[in-house]
Image (cartoon, rainbow, N blue to C red; front, side, top):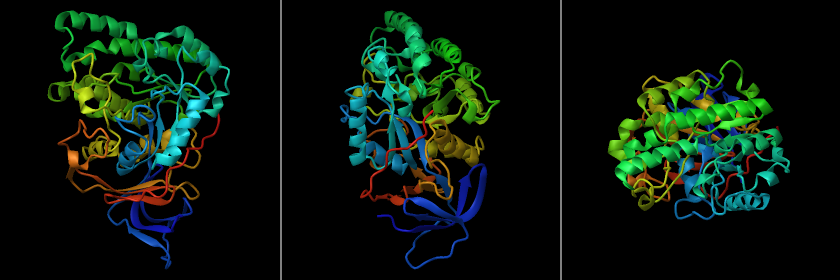
Length: 448
């Protein structure tokens, strides 16, 4: 049951502005913003000197539930998300089983309703195995369809590799189509070349040469061309190259865009210079690339060619990561620290607080047409995070909440700290203490 919570005297960051105000939370929603008198039954949170953001919406995570729960699950990873100020997420279909049917999708929602502390939604998986079934469905009922991660199940599951399958989907799908954009034929040829030289033990620093710019650019260019042909709603996941950023528009509002993209925080935080230090721990697909790419991605984020920031949170056990090149699993956990990473960029004067909120809160809600989320507005769900911009701490194993128990950010000093996180008006995280009585909600959205 929601209590009435009054956040006093905080700096609200919302819709391009920062201003000091009180915010009242009541019955799941924001009921008032302004100068608010204290009533006897209010729980008071002192926001003096702190910044209040809308809850972060992470549009791409792999929480591993069902079937891969030795890595993470909808409880553990949503808990880590909450500690990082993330109040809503969209999870990918590469679980076991792959989420390729309406039945398995419904079962996943049921699991989340019992386990997730944050609000949740799920992509329906699409591959050559189920494309004919998917195009017969009313796909507008899904928040989106995606092939991301399904290549782990078998070769040939990346839509970008199959123009015929993409065309069939683009011509018949009424939801967002979110794709992993690399040409596997280019990747496989590069793998062959490096394997001839190094065998199974290819050094991690060659990962961006194997999963290179050419493979990404050609896949993205082709997908965009086909999407335009069919007037489809295409979203390119986890962009990694400066070259690809020039394929996207910034001359129209996000609401009018049919073709959109995102950057995952690790592609802004790390570069190829970090492979010698971190090795396979930062092996992601698509690969972390050069400093030029890193800088180009940030520039495109700032000028609105890139529409949102995600984590691509993908936990694996340390044993699964610390293998030779071909055996090491791609992906790493990030969701507990993504807001801290972006706030470090703010501390370096690389991005404003208002732009961070736009890309991590407003734009995911716009892109996926979420109902009453992503903003600090009267009548909207009270998904909020209160942040201290001047509170140093170090990422260590003892403060990690990921089930896998490790992070590529271990040893990093952050200058900012998430103090409180509110989900649907409930205080779920308060200075390291969790209140887990109330679970998150399924995210409602408008149909396309």
